[in-house]
Length: 172
DNA sequence: GCCAACGTTGGC
DNA sequence: GCCAACGTTGGC
Image (cartoon, rainbow, N blue to C red; front, side, top):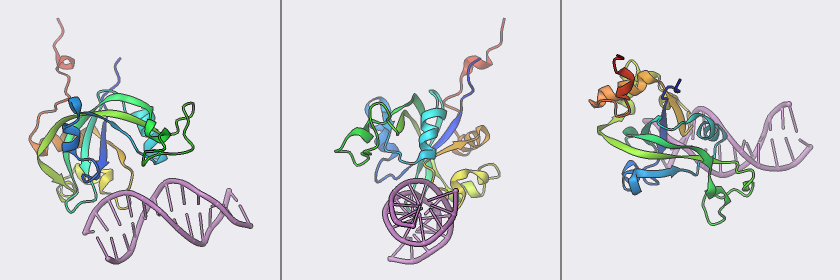
């Protein structure tokens, strides 16, 4: 049996890498690299799977918000920026054999018609419990429940772009 | 710009 | 293993 799709929230400072930047990548695909936090690393390496849904969140701006959707198109593999002395994310501990840091590839799916702000989320019965709202939470890769994913879509007025119609096909 | 919260480092 | 110091994150 196929693994259930899971959902994640990925934070990015738009001044560094925005949803628009992702959209403009070839095929809308870009490695999610440079993450240098062990808890987030573990999620990138072990938990995010191909086909998983991603809420793209803009942080560290005047109106932090979920601004769009993406999907995981390649599962955890070594983050080569850690091996590159020229990279801002270079880590001398990393080697080919022990990469230390991992990344996934994500693909742009769509922008939300309007950003869903923290205030929007706080006021929503399902979204109010999202990790991203918790004080002091700095984790840049966070799990999102299916209910939260659907609530975001519902607020945005979108159909689930990752829904697999064949799953609901009537047999016989 | 402020500052609370957190993760990491390193001396002991 | 403890914990103080430090750097970073990120909302406000």
